[in-house]
Every structure is written in C-alpha cells, then in structure tokens.
Length: 83
Image (cartoon, rainbow, N blue to C red):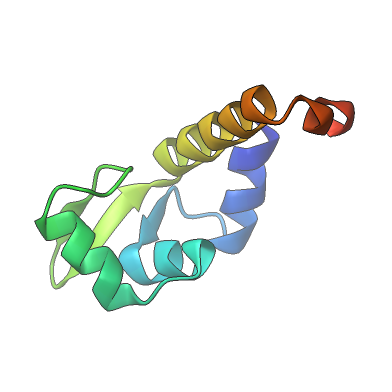
C-alpha cells in the first residue's frame, strides 16, 4: 500500500500515470515504453486516452511490489530490509 501512496505523490494525486511517467520510473525512454506497449511486452496494462497512453497507479504499484518480492526470494539477504 505504501508503494501506491508514493506513486500517487509522483503523479500529484492522479490515479493514472502516463507512459512518459512510467518510463522515468523504469529509467527508459518513453519511446521504448511505447514499443513495449505495441509488442504487448509491457508488464503493466496501458490504454490510449486521447493521444497518450495511460496506466493505473494501482497496477504499477502491484507490479513494483511483485518485483520486490521476486528480488527478495532470489536474494534472501535483502529480506533484512523488508517491512
């Protein structure tokens, strides 16, 4: 839940995130994220709203939390820093 609140701070309280904001979060270019969306390789579902691709902050938070869980299971010494 804390992940979602942190993401809401990044989006000024909006429950959605643009593909450019998601790209910054992943340290990728917006074009790379667009290519992943087109190829259906993006880990988060996106939809088109006007001229921009949008995703749910809740979906991004769920994905990030899942990535954290995977990292902890593969590198158990990271569990020391878990909640």
